[in-house]
Image 1: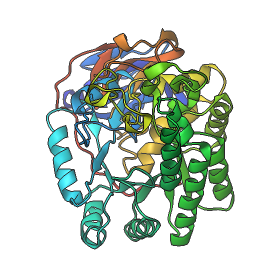
Image 2: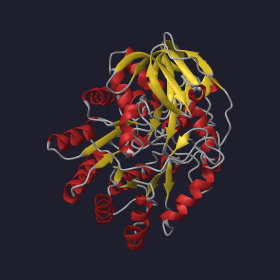
Image 3: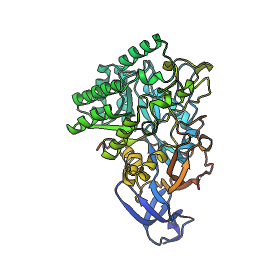
Image 4: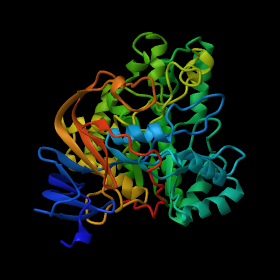
Length: 473
């Protein structure tokens, strides 16, 4: 090999696993991309021995929240630096958080603000989803189509939360823009009026502890909204992605739609595999600690956990995301707003999980709940395709970015917040033991984590990724 073709990095003896293949080889990297896969490659400027480890594509977390503007004095604990630092330590090399439109504001202003928040901070590569909260005629006819053409090809809409929810007619209008412009709509499916009615009833009865959050958002309100979102997609004839699906009832609606040939995609998250209503104190009054597990939809029960695992293995879900929502527990800008312990309806929704997403799902391999190929498909390959980043991201192949994570499949780790790298003061998965952990993490050929130790790469090295056309297969 000529001197000018010297490889920057060679990963030796790699046991490579993609969504469809598994093979042994050396991986040669040049200029941040995979240049060659082969045997007995010439020596590189840097050499790493992967003997005994699995070489997987870097994770793509297609649903996380970082430094998102919040109302009423609330603040997310993680910005783009601490959030992406935690991501790479957990084996995720690409994140896609949300540029959220405010009511009365423009989408473009939200995107401009989000770029300011990310630039100079992100360690990992990143893209943006949009959140459409105010679909005015100008947004629908001008702003949204223009942003889609510029690489913002996915956006989220809400069927709940007063400051975000869209009417049924607005939902249909947004879906029509997605169809006309080749974009993907992500849907938070819960019935707002049912939740409001149940919340008022519970508070009127003095039932305000965190554990009542789950009773205000039972599976029926997710089931109904999921079915309604499916109906909208059918009317407009456009694919949608139902996000953070929590259990059996919504899964049944999605499976029914998929069985009819409708292009309904689905996502779930770690909280629906590992947390239950009991973690909010539902089986007894555990006090305010249950606020740590308040998220929407809420965790269900062990039967629903099992249903989510089965649906992951059975192909109902396309992606597995963290829905990282980093609010500190002991914080007047977090889970105790204003320094108070309010009724459940005023607790900021969401749990942290950007670093623990992949190990929690990988543990399912050791327990026989899914295969290595399914793991890669759910956490890297499928989100890269859905969000227009494939084949640059999501696989190990010549020409792809050298986002490679070396995993020790036998390493047992007991999750402890003290060992994590986010800026949140707790993890809801404290004390859970998992089998399998990422030990070395490379982003575009640069080692960011070595032997589990974060190497302090330059803040701001992460690059913005303009998305291509979503592949919704």
